[in-house]
Image (cartoon, rainbow, N blue to C red):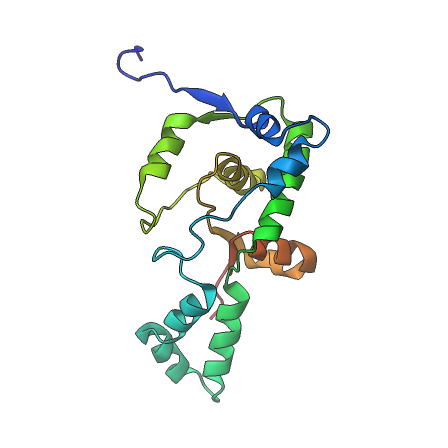
Length: 190
């Protein structure tokens, strides 16, 4: 394709940006992560976890499924499943994950180039606009990199769909949940 058909992206290296925002080189990742402020944590697009749980449990489809549950106990089972799935963002955990991923990313990559125009378009969206990001999931790094890049560029943190198999690893499940992951079954039986 010709340059006039597809404009060149203005790219910035996320690793350099994180280091430069952090100050002294030996403390840069830590001071950068500690300076992060969780933005837009409870807008219409991302309401508090408890209100999401209540909305799901009061939906007609869930009520219908509860009514069809044999042997009773459907309400308790539904609430347990929804609570198990729910994300609960935590600013201290996001800061810790930002610091850990900065350290890991510096070991794995020499650069992480990011399209600043695309990020600018994300920032321009109204805060109550839902956004769906679709990483390719060629590896587990996809969703970690997307989240970390948004963290570095001070864009609203995403909620990430994670397989329920992560629930079997207690510390990882908690860290992911507090970083915005919600858990979905890999398969639905029955």
